Amino acid sequence: MPNVLIADDDKFSRILLEKIVQKIGYTTDSVEDGKSALEALKGTKYDILLTDFNMPAMNGIELTRRALELDNSILVILITAYGSIKQAVEAIKLGAYDYLTKPVNNDELQLIMKRGLETLSLLKEVILLRQQLDSIEGHFDFITESNAVRKILDEAKKTSNSDSIILITGEGGSGKEHLARYIHHNSNRAKEQFVVVNCSSVSKEELESNLFGVSDTGEGVAKLGYLEIAENGTIFLDDITSVDLALQYTLVRVLQSRKFSRVNENKVQTTNARIIAATSNDIPSLISKGLFREDLYYIMNVFEYNLLPLRNRPEDIILYFNKFIQNYTNLYGKRIREISSEVRAALLNYDWPGNVRELKNIAERVSILAENGKITPDLLPDKMFIKEEKSKVLLTNDFNENKREVVREFERKFLTKFLKLFRGNISATAREINFHPVTLRQKLIDLGINPKEFKKKLN
Image 1 (cartoon, rainbow, N blue to C red):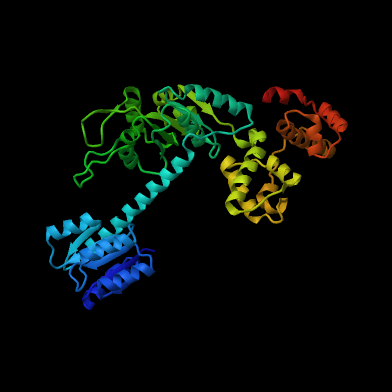
Image 2 (tube, rainbow, N blue to C red):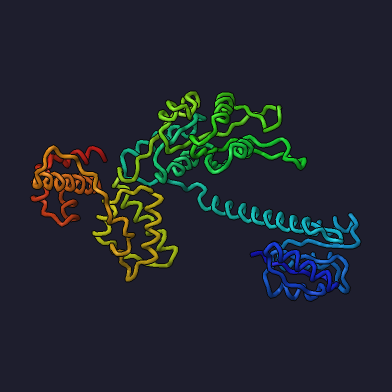
């Protein structure tokens, strides 16, 4: 909740301002002069200083200067009955955010405070983003043990310096944005902007103005769109299939010509922004239903990469889990010495409907709950042990035959996951699942599973 300090030598004005500010949910303190205001600022963090221009001993301009010396992030708003442009300009030059004249208009004061806090929040975001960008600049990777994903990364790196549009498909949480960032950071655009646009989170009108900009927002000011902001950079259009059909038509023209116009403007501009699009939906199916333009699909899929769900790349499950555990234990100041074999088995047997995003959340959970440096099954959520079996419909009512088939199906799935994890190594697999290697070989022959196939897939 924003905290506001009010400085005014007139008691009635202080009471009135307090009521206005408190009405919108902000907390307030009030003082009667500049000296008292400075003392309050030294002892308490305030978001806004609301001060009268003309006070005895120290006027609003001097208070503005000294307040900003104490805290350069505070928003100073001055109020005066002697409102000259010259005084206002002088205060703003010192760093004041804005000024009002008496009698104060309630709505105008509330609007200025809200707008000031929004501006401050955006500035903080920019600083934070710059810090994050500085920390990852020149260091961005996509780790995997999956042969299928490695193949995608190899090709994606080759195409990174081209201007071709790329389409990334895959289930939610499978790493589509991460792959887009990998492509961007391996390209000659790496030092330029990478802008993420979630097409499903805003209206058609807002998405259009965000992408192309607006010639006049109604305040005599133009709004820049991402195609201008990310000039020479990369724009990641997430959930592209949620875009309205009319806007899809506009995208077709823009992607073909590399030219666009701001909303409500006829002036044509060019863009060199690289487009990467992503979806978790089946685009051909949407095309057949008339929900997605076929021409847009063919423009976007010069290169199309489909990221497998996590359940289909078990070799990455333990890899990512260990990586996330390391990150979170560093964050929370813990030390994990052991992850039990039962936990690894549960991780490999779970279907991961939320993919990597869900795995990351569970890693954070167990990192927080773990005691004595060990991660045990009781720390995992119950849902990981509740499994709905999708059994085959058998052509017999024989109980024993049904039972044998269910057991064999479980054995196939269980052993296949661990063989993938250990790249077909019989000894390592047997040791992990507490099986004798000879018994495991016999079981694999019985089930018709060839461990050599897993070596081929991963080499």
